[in-house]
Each structure stands twice: as C-alpha cells, then as structure tokens.
Amino acid sequence: MLDEEDLGPADEALLDMLREGRVTAPYAADKTGYSLQYVRDRLGRLVEHGNARKVYEGLYELIEDPRRKTS
Image (tube, rainbow, N blue to C red):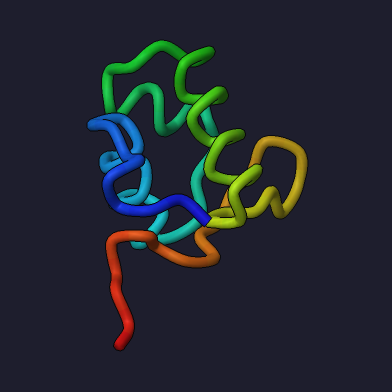
C-alpha cells in the first residue's frame, strides 16, 4: 500500500475520482487534464500497490484510499 506522503497531485485527483466510483483511464484523463498515458501509469501504480484494482480491461475501482487513516 502507498502511504499518503507517496502521493502526487495526479494520484490525489485519481483517488478522489475512484472514491466516487469506477473509472476508465480515458475518462480520468479527460476530467483531470493529465495525458492518457500518465493516467494509465498512475492507475497502474495504484493497482501495483494494492490501493486500486482493475475490474475489467481498462476499468478501475478503489480498494483502499491511502489518505484514510484508521486507528
């Protein structure tokens, strides 16, 4: 899992979108203004670290938001 200090502005924007529901990379790129390839890279990083998962080809959902701390 990524920690909050590992997140950049693009990660924050993607996590905000994922908290609202599933997203595709093209949709996220359109809404955030980041390039499609950059969004795909960032989503892949979130998947790699267990914060998101790929539900279907190109469709992502949130598993755990690293900004939410549970005590």
